[in-house]
Length: 269
Image (cartoon, rainbow, N blue to C red; front, side, top):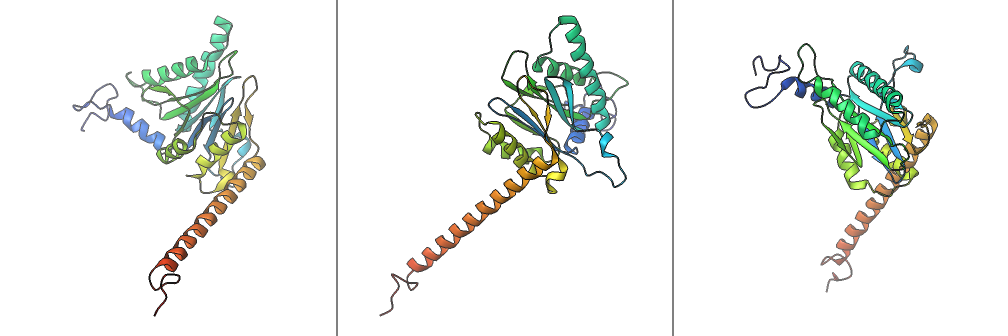
């Protein structure tokens, strides 16, 4: 690997660009972000790090950012890299409005973000962006929710539900088992928070949620509502665990009673 991991524009003999792969490792070390599409809503959920005691949380950057009135993104990876990429995306969205006199589509702005990321994988004197993004929203005059992902390599793809950041594989597997196409607003929010709780152990205080609906501005879910959802989900989990435990006890008891020498069929002579 000598030398090949230092030069951005040089392939290794086995076809790797190591700086891009290192950028993807930076994403895996970032906090988890989840995007989920419902029937007519799309929800973003992010794990947020606990604030330090003396930190002013009012001006601490969020992991969820508006690109335009109808387009929002969440990211995992390096915060400083995200700030630069978000500024570029916002500038492109406003430039498009002035030039074309129409808002950007969600796919257009996703493709633009991915294009910027890709250019930083083959230019001298720069390094790849150490972030992945989830871009969500609604196209102009369309009520269909959109969800896209971009990666440090410049790849972009469309999803029904997806996760990026640490433990994203675990969260994605949970989403694959539980996602449904016709979920309403409440079900979509619940699934988003449930999936985050697969990796967030500290509960509601380390979760932020944004909701996008057609023709409406982004809605950031208040902390007390997130807390209520988390309590409801935890209660539901406890009830399911109790039911499973009762079912196991019943099965074990039935097996003992039907065993020779154990009850109904086991009378001694």
